[in-house]
Image (cartoon, rainbow, N blue to C red; front, top):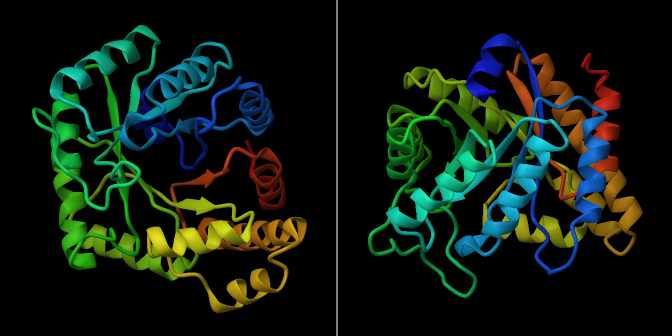
Amino acid sequence: MFIRELLRQKNFSLSFEVFPPVREGNLDSLYRTIQDLKTLSPDFISVTYGAGGSTRDKTIEISSKVKNEFKLEVTAHLTCVQSTQEDIVKILDEFRKENIENILALRGDPPKGEEKFVKPAGGFGYANELVEFIGSKNGFCIGVAGYPEGHPEAPSREADLVNLKRKVESGADFIITQLFFVNDAFYKFRDRADRLGISKPIIPGVFLLQNYGQMVKISELCGATIPSKLAENIYKVKDQPAEVEKYGTDHAFRQAEDLVKNGVRGLHLYTMNRSEPAIQVVKWLNLKR
């Protein structure tokens, strides 16, 4: 089912993000995680796409398994990085072959070792170009990313919202936000998007923080504001993974609870390929699935 249709039919959606393991090997652990998440009756699973297409085949393999064997709806990520238009056509053909009809279209981050994104020869430089191209091939529902605190490369949050509107006008059907830890950033983003005439559903992305290193990396890479109290608590127990996870899960629940109370269209949980924290948050929320 197209996610745009799913969102029209439901007042509230629940979804989870997983990613292909970086190291080679079997995918049994990831599939056990997805099987656990399936018990929560998610509306869809999102499968990420490695920098430079480094996990492209795994993304397609996992997405196919989610859709055709787990019988869950899936949205597969697709980026512009190091891909020509011909490459994108081949990937879309593979998606069709595997029954994958929802795509999260992204510009993508630079490949490892490179500081800046470089438009590939014969490819695309911006996500809106990729959205328009996918739309021209028919048969897909297209999602895009939104940045409550602004894309790190954007000159301002206002400019970043203009870019989001450009993606929507190019054919995007729904928006999933980058992670954030302060809900006020999301509410302001949602209000500004509404004033700008962005009417597509916006689903907030909530991150399940599980270790200290994640927190440091996130603040460096995407500039998400981390509340001082959360940072202090996690720093105190940074060498105790179980305690860090407790703080991260509790914060995610409090975020999600407040978001639900404030009328969000759904929740998208960044699981980091672990089911236990996500299951705990959903159970605490007592969502009727």
